[in-house]
Image (tube, rainbow, N blue to C red; front, side):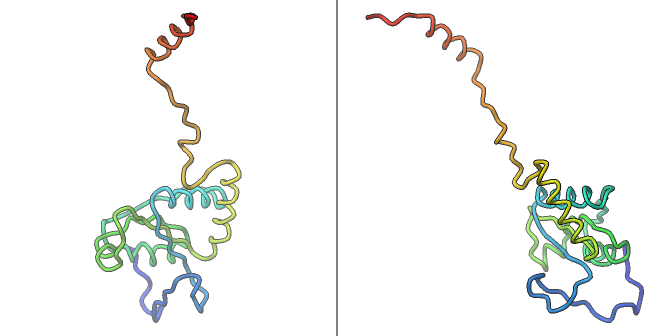
Length: 150
């Protein structure tokens, strides 16, 4: 479990990023797995390396906040019981935290990876080409060979 040094911080202040009247030390984002993967892709493209996801199924705040501050690196977080019970985190959500020093780089990485085709939502069906069973094609060929009667 990650713990902050005793006495280094006197309090915790949290707010939605667009309403914060202070300079935050970190940003916490919730999203579905595909959205969080986009953030990881942005991080990897701009900062380099990879991210690990360590979880205990609980004590998310020690990962969200403490580990992000202690390592000064981004974290992928699977919300635990407390986050679901008190924070109303939904079953389809996970989280991503980043220190402010990496926010601009991560956004730049998102822009770079967008240019090479990485998207949310993932455009998987845009490349889909439907196919019929082989019998349909054989029947179509048979019909094409027959001449219509006058």
